[in-house]
Length: 505
Image (cartoon, rainbow, N blue to C red; front, side, top):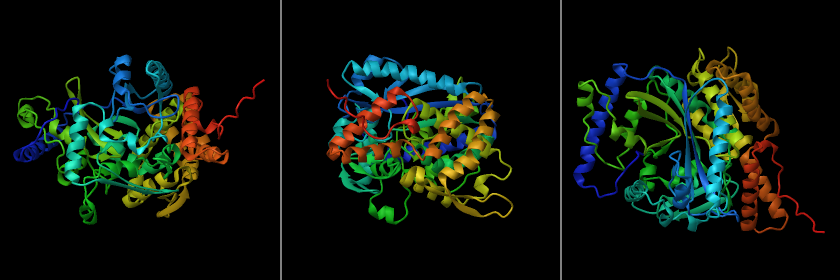
């Protein structure tokens, strides 16, 4: 969304001026691509994790300003609501023992942040949706005190022109309304960045889209919202509905939502940026002084500020990113599919699986996206969000006969995709010890049919059976989750249920 956005009113001429500027930015991007001005391959990856602040009782704490002040590190920053933080890990080169190094960096960073949060009686929890969140927690007064969030909320609310409707039917059904985008803050995720050359961008993005459903199936961690058990991964429907600028009439006309899986395979990064301009009106029509085409004419590198800002308000699950580092432009695929948590080991295992798999699939002689309809990839994503580790997927049939077959996600992952991910990581130069450790975590989840969502749901139901009320069961599940998260053993090893009380005497 850009580092600094200053809140203010827009007049009628702002949007037209911004649209014109966006077109000049798009032309600038087209010229950069044609002139091959982009960075050479560096095998760079990056990682961001959104976090929750929680009290000892398992309830959210609206304290991110105070906690960030104590952390005092540029690696940590605000997120949408006052109970959110985000940690950013500096880019790493894929290869060697990169995943072990990442895990150690994250352990150090999160332990420090947790200690600092403890100074104000809070703690850090990595989870897709905090089970103890209540509707009263997700209101505009609890948005972080940052201009860009206020402005974004105001513009999305104005574009919609009426209350947001949340209607998610899963194990149970949730229906409610909101006057702001605050419910979107419940969605805390992991973002995986991969820097790619323009020539490889489309193959990597297509591969990432093809495996988004598989990522969710093995990594789901968000079964609860507002006291209801919904989908195994409830973030995608919640995110779409809580940022939906379309009233029902526009939905009926087929207008695309701003939180979007997409509708086709692509042949260039340009396709995605161009779609964003064609389909989505500006939410934040803030114009930069730079003329991108003049900068290019003078041999410089344009920031494409309007294009970058607009791109940040279209919430694709695999998003294209334009950036500049050391004066050289580059492109990244930002994978936004995964929920946060449950543990650092689980987060790194999910990352290793993704980076290995997209490399292997992007290099196949008959790529998966030439054999799988895009609609099937979108349906796989939806099925995985609903059913998690028990989802069934449509996937290209092996062998010469072609066509597709329906298969259990766990069977697909264990028999076909884990070997591919291992080969992809070997292609990056990742050492066997890292590959075996972290891909082994994914294999064990599949073998035991266990992930964060299945553990949360099973533990919650055990708590209900033990006589706890729903609210007490959700709070107890959250507290137990936090304990096990900090112990750090991967989620497939977690014992289901609450610990037995220790007898006195």
